[in-house]
Length: 165
Image (cartoon, rainbow, N blue to C red):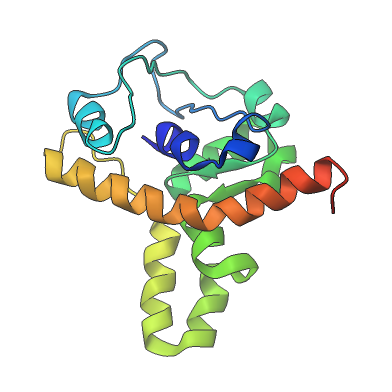
């Protein structure tokens, strides 16, 4: 869902300059998206019918400018495959939710409410596999919310690579 969602969120001026791919840390190559993932995204105008899973490889990680893991275990797996990708690998919920401070920095800066948000962010977004449609809807909303926070950083990176900034 994250790949399709990010593609749908990219403004036209960025869409042609950014390649978005999805790769799983425990994926079986060639599997379609679940029926509920297709339904949840279709309700928002995103078509996943043609999506097929692929397993993350070390080469993919090394060649990527930005890697967003949904769960901490995904980030750990990327770093096992490609330790040199550490600076480009993030938990989807941390950078977008707290900026460069990370989850722990937000705890101290925002008190009890910030601590709770920091703990939630550090857990990432759980895969709804096996869940009901409403769980897929909830997951879609979380993914979208966090990806919206990543868009300015993606734009900045593209502009820096083009020498605009």
